[in-house]
Image (cartoon, rainbow, N blue to C red):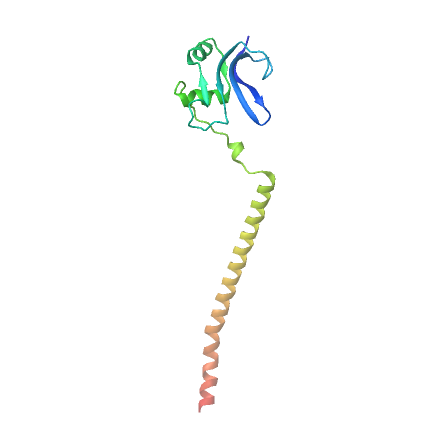
Length: 148
């Protein structure tokens, strides 16, 4: 029998309350369980002692019997110091959605177009400066002739 240490939801609508239970993995979430190991009340403040209450003696017994804790229960055990902290990394979750990626691509295209326009403007300014430098040399004799 594959055992899990998981949460079984109780409480009314929009007022959740969970029992931490040892249950057969084939049973439904709120269905039959073998033993109640504690409680979790997410409505209480995070620093409250009554938010998560576990009977650690029985939890350790079930872990010794091969029961697998769910991700949320692992976090409870890590917070209580009874289980070593594990590094979590989900790079897929950090990726932006489809529309956000489209907006990023549009913004990158606009930035690229602005950079190209700035380069063209700089080249045009250099060309104009070169023409301006060459033009006074040609006009200088004409001005001297007018001055005489």
